[in-house]
Image 1: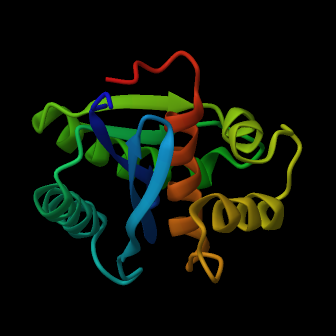
Image 2: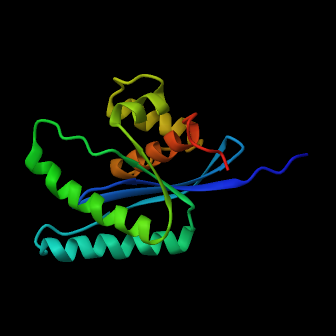
Length: 166
């Protein structure tokens, strides 16, 4: 029997108020759920303190789970550009920590994450969350939804054909 390297992947759904995260392992294409959660910050705190808390929390998650790779949604500016700025700032902090820790980062457009998890690019949030539950063999949909989105990104990193498998 041949031994295949096990990849540990940290999925991240960045946001200033809530940054979702999820950790998976991929052993020869077999996905194993490890853990998930969310980093929350308070709206009444100064923005710099909120970003620092996200940075510190991501470092702690990396130290605890020791991922070699990360998956994150590519920033997409829709109709409300002003709401995208805090997301971009949180994403920047997360990206800096991933670079600091020499973690390989895979970025996916939102429609590719939907397709990678559900098979269709127009899937709605509920469909994506249910498929995350099914793929990971969980009894319930991961909560909160930011954590489910982070796990969807990690699943996409496992299933994407152009990602090296070790």
